[in-house]
Image (cartoon, rainbow, N blue to C red):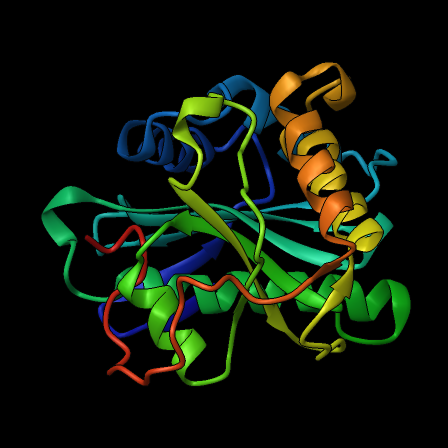
Length: 242
């Protein structure tokens, strides 16, 4: 347990704890298009039981003096591609605008880095996440040289083709600072996100997934997304803080 001002950061490592359900329900009600709460609870149970999984699920909650979840953050270490993935970040509606999400996300990143160091002796290659296109927060990170948005049309599993351009996948370089990546390396990353993080059984049966792969392979090399200019902005709110 870590003190964060008037709030405490709690690592939720037991799916039977009431805080686990409360944190995941906060994520579900705040974001909407997420995995079922019971599936996410199973991720925590697998970690608690030491099941082989290709990387652990991480769930952190920021709680107030009454023990209620003020914010929740979930992520996973994608061991197969040595990358951390931020799956969900949510802040209670009455507490948004206080930058709680930013602080909690930092603890989540540290938790994933610790797993990578424990298993591989080094940081993961990147921390990866997805945000809505035009995100001021991501634009700030890009301007500061702290993030690289992938230059291809990204879809998470619940998006339809007509939603192309709504989200962007980005990476924060840690051990791997390359500005451009071979397309096949990005294919493996996206496949692992769908297959491991989102538990999609057969991504290659998805028309949307195959469309992403075709676009990636046609490009050959994947650089930064052209919609994000290198202009520095003051670091303000994270997705989930609003």
